[in-house]
Length: 327
Image (cartoon, rainbow, N blue to C red; front, top):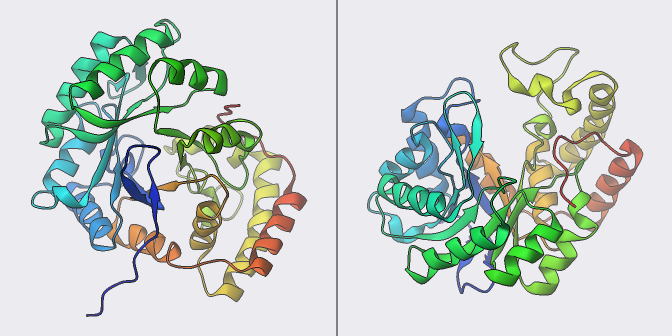
């Protein structure tokens, strides 16, 4: 069997580490909002990501009420820890029904230490603040994470779900190497201010929701395609006029993808990875074939004509209703 072409490596801020332009997002394998998950598939998915040359795994303390995601990763990477640039997050927990935030330094320390135990390692390469709690001063949160880095529990610090003014305040206390925010063809608000700031300061940007919770994979069609238990039914993107506009938009992407001999999901992920300032694209998966398809997209390069057609389709679609906006 011939070796797969390598996936492009990109700098993780100023950490000295390099990550692949696609990362495995490990929220789906926690099985909280994802239907039809099981441990065997989850383990196989993580291992397939490594086999495909994806070196960046992204998880969090809150990915599962009992740390399911981190525990599965721990099992999956036995004997392969040196292949992984491992990221986790602290400051949020999930009790099985809802998320709860606590970005205090004491809680971040406790969660970090528990995450390391779950992951079976003495450090992670990247530790994120999962999000602010609205109570703890960001300066305290930043100082707490800086301490954990000084102690060697992480090699790099990142922040997620912060607006630019919050990122700047955090960065003034604890220099960051990465920012993680939602970004996709229909949700590009960070291009206005946050992305230019990150480029200027040498901060890596990890884009989550590249497929807009599955919408941009192009597989959902019809008037009511979601299971009644599916939480995505509550998102504006999946409702009414927005849904109709998105289907018309996806028809145009399907045409471009067909001419390029790619799936719609591959087209969307490749486009995201080629956007200026985007370092890595976080792609969730719960089965091996999903991350295999994603990894294949990052070995491809969209042509100028394909990019032009995509840009025209986005312009024709117009502004879309997004669930989260960070400027």
